[in-house]
Length: 308
Image 1 (tube, helix red, strand yellow):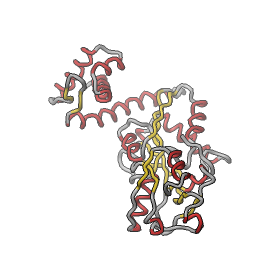
Image 2 (cartoon, rainbow, N blue to C red):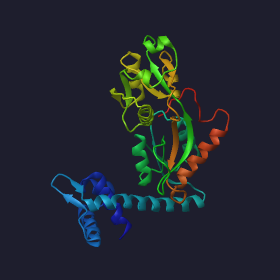
Image 3 (cartoon, rainbow, N blue to C red):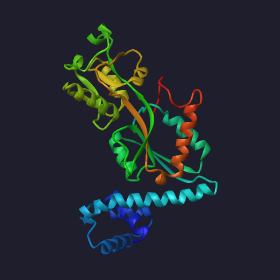
Image 4 (cartoon, one colour):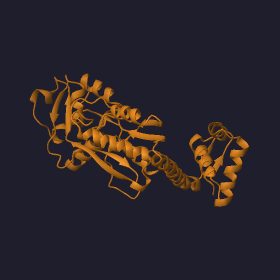
């Protein structure tokens, strides 16, 4: 099994099309097809279901994809490690993050990283924490800043960034704002909720807290960005339970502490592969982050955060 066979296989799986994958890889379509056939012969099973419009993975293909991505990520890390020993950090830094993650100012961090390592190409994508964990474990991302969704495994480890309580945001004329007191999940049982997609860290934290309290809630207004959530609350269309640092993003909204949720907190982490599989670029970024967090006025703050 050759590395180029795995590279070709992953490209076709991503594009779901032989012609597009061949164009991206700068190889002929016939050569790409021959490479995939060679891999299928070696594994003695079809990897794709081919139609006139696209190709899809077979069950065997889906099983191979995760392993192929991990192998290619390790090979890439090996090349980058050799370059790092030679004194030059090169390659690609593939970073994932949720929006407005607590404990790190992503844009500021990446700007500092680019200044120090201009030969490293930075790639950034936003997604929910569950998806980001899967991407890091599969080797598709070098690291991610996310909500802690699981315990460490053989393929994924976490470095704590910060932990904070949840806060209720509501319109100043809302009955909760008039009371001005801390609220419990029971106090919010009949409210209309604005919240994020279920894979987002704040949504996961709130769902966990309400489930632990035995309070059922329905998210009537579901959004995928922070500003839309704040706009809906600002129009008094619902209330939101969010991490405490969100209260700085819209000062005219009323922020109330949440009590009665036990040990439930919003905990953000850096997600990385095992140390031996962590790329030099990811290690350099984490070193920069830790150094900045130790300095006065560094990247971690519970004040206003612009995030990415």
